Image (cartoon, rainbow, N blue to C red):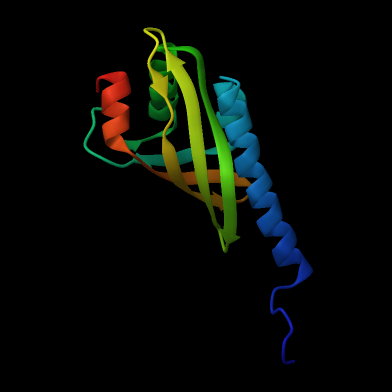
Length: 142
């Protein structure tokens, strides 16, 4: 029928659930609760960080936990990641976000991000992280 949305209620509900999952991940991350955040990810998690910094590259689940702990360990209260926009389609949730944190030596970390999350079977399975690598270098000396 003309003008009707081809997406049914189940598809819409799945996309909304995927967006809620991503928001819950970043809420837990922002509380430095990496156990809760990573419980929302599959054991087969692959996390890719853009750029050419020392932290750029691809991580598995234990590797990304180690990166989170290392980066947050250099801050006063961790890094808050605030979603700005979320868009869901098929098994993907795209999120623009802003970060906010302060290093132990007083530098302010405020980066702009784009994360692409792949969600399957109710868990985050893949993340592609895009940000300003020069800001990462300037603040964290990596």
